[in-house]
Length: 322
Image (cartoon, rainbow, N blue to C red; front, side, top):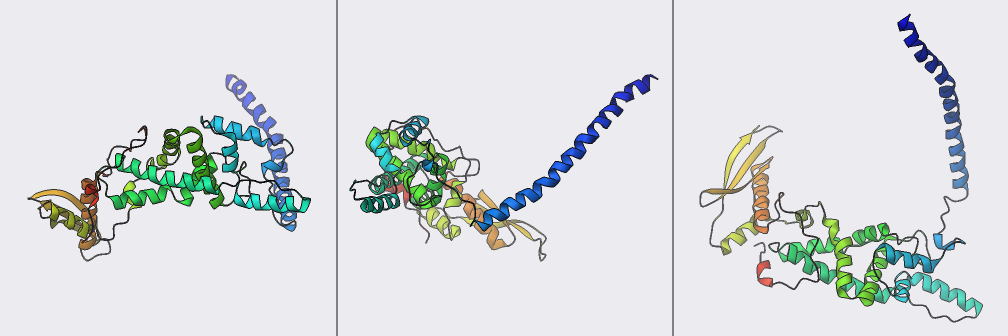
């Protein structure tokens, strides 16, 4: 009897859940055909129609610009920030519309600010990378710099800062180029509004931090690491000797070789590969990482440098492949 009393609540709960399950199944049975019908009607109308938020009745551009600066904890000149968000295509569209109405209102686009911001971003990123990667060659620094100032990276940063709905452009959704150009213009506006130091910290916090958790060696493609390594060590007056120190699965599809590099009878690095040549190349890459201070266990890049770093001597960046 005690066991029966314990089981009765379980039986009642199962019975009560049956109608809910059946009802849920009935709801789900109607959802798919309804969504399919919505999609069919949407395609018939030429696809999904998206309108920018600045076309809504409750849109307040001045409030959005003010809130944008406060979210980033930056002080912008309101006119410069408006200019930074004004794309050239929007100005052309407005000029044509005003011409039809007999008006003549001068509007400024963000091309000038984007040029100034782009130059500042390029220069500051190079100085910063030279400071935090003191042993990395200039070629490698420029490869990382090209990645950070690329349209894809700046577009990604701009999009996640919430610029998409504020940008004034003739097309919507805005293109990746317009997003990246708006970010450059924002940096240019901040440069004129608050000075170089605030603009530098802005670029550091939102652009250079894109390297967080990334392997900086992946941005620099070295075509011949062995030639570069020998060119470097010859200047130091030492010789590097490669030795085959391990192999397994020889003459099979799963062959693996290990090559070690020795300097003065001391192994400085090793590499693995499906052939001796590949293993030698991988060992050379590992040796270069040690020379440049960019090993896999390197310390994280310092993202807290204040101010603008000073230019460093070019003498440390003379490593070239022979």
